[in-house]
Length: 203
Image (tube, rainbow, N blue to C red; front, top):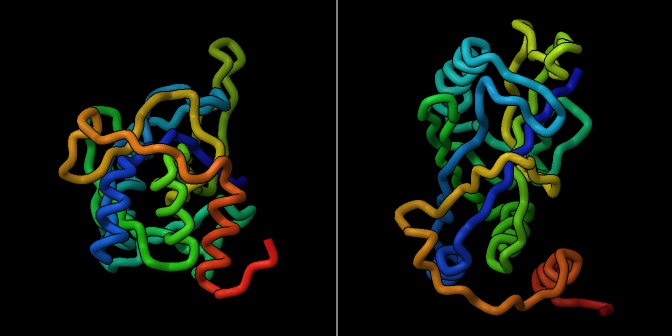
């Protein structure tokens, strides 16, 4: 079965503006996932299993620079390159937290993601993997089993209830300048991106 794990992801809009203006890569970092903690769906990822999969991910996709993810979860175990928005360049452990450095790519999906960040839209970071779970009725949890295989992390619209926000690389988020929202909703942002890229707009 397809297993997903959601976490909220928040990025400093000032850094995004600077990245776009200077045509530089946007790099963000923070918590990607947490071991031994019950998530929104009551699911628990044992640390030993997650450590194994993180090491495999480091030795494979990250080392080979193919640790890509999509904007929105597909109902599939395949990473669709047409929807790729980012690449994970580094992963490390901080206690039970899986930390990561993420490069937002200048792909169509990556540019949409940058616009969402620039306008203060909170999105989630979510792992995608395959495996089975075992239910514990007494503790009201389901535990991920040893056959779990980590596939990637995607950016999604559904955040977790656990607060672990990503932050821009090299900036103190608490000192960021707050800007006014330019758009009222996500649809307006996406519409404007399409209009800008095609040069035509019926809206």
